[in-house]
Length: 386
Ligand SMILES: Nc1nc2c(ncn2[C@@H]2O[C@H](COP(=O)(O)OP(=O)(O)OP(=O)(O)O)[C@@H](O)[C@H]2O)c(=O)[nH]1
Ligand SMILES: [Mg+2]
Image 1: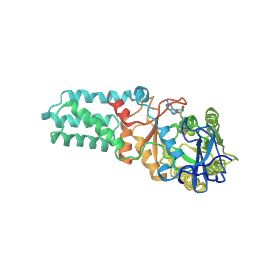
Image 2: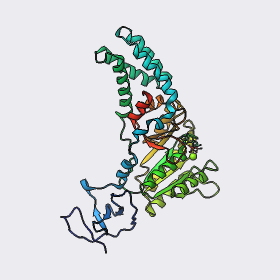
Image 3: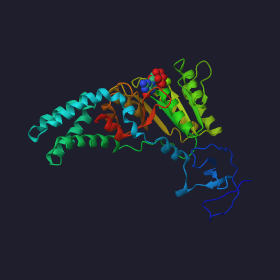
Image 4: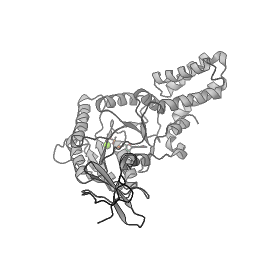
């Protein structure tokens, strides 16, 4: 029997281990706690002892709780600021439009500030910032000019960048994945057709697997004939398990619920639920999605931990309508912006975050398995205004 150390007891007190039903010795990172096993309502973790022997039952409570899933969200979000060019290489069109801002501000003077601000608003509109957001940005700058806080072109450009950064960050909750405190964490990937849901799910699985996480995929796209096989390829590439649809007319809700139940029984860390692409304007399909979420919650009350809406970065302002509708129907917890390596339309992202106060959590920058990066608002703004 291994040694037990109860951290809530005086140091060194040795206690008996609970019956750990689902033990798992996966390593989540080199020095990190190596196991989280649910024993009743308590979370018991283990780590290697200094002698290299494994020590069971390091109890993680209150301030000392080492939340495996919480930490995982942070690890997954590590930043990639150095790679701005790769991250947002698709912003060339938006950047081209916004280059006019530099010209406008070079000739800025107080007497002409009204007409220049009008032109600035035009430029923002052309760059896919929605009307409300463009007006809001220009109004804030106007106030600062009138109050004498902005006195030169470069100051106005800096203020413009700061305002956009603020809109992307001020009212949103964290951009880290929120995976809860108990396993499995369940993530649903939703969105319109062809946005990149399945590819993103595969990339996410790859990120999780790199952290030593036990991943179960759920082939919830029962509509498109080849969707299951597509996901199966991603499961093989990433070494994940998968629950496939069965029978002649499988229901997506049943597939997802089966996957969540299996994940609980077999002690998976994360369930990634793929769903069919659907138009946000199609009532029946949106109701079906609501049913999927309900089924997942029924299988595990804490699920889903995240509902991630995939937005195709090249679609422009239509993404605002998509985001509104998906959020209203199932409650979106984060966005994943894909295809930022294509001809992405940067401005509308600001409008979506501004209007819905939901964070962008990741960006897709290619079709490859590693082409998923955590979203970083400062890099985003720097990419728009180099
Ligand atoms: N360039 C680029 N292509 C991407 C990116 N993400 C996905 N794709 C491509 O977009 C196409 C559609 O991707 P899928 O993952 O099948 O999209 P989906 O949303 O699952 O599609 P449906 O299930 O049919 O609704 C594929 O060719 C992907 O390789 C990205 O970040 N950049
Ligand atoms: Mg798909």
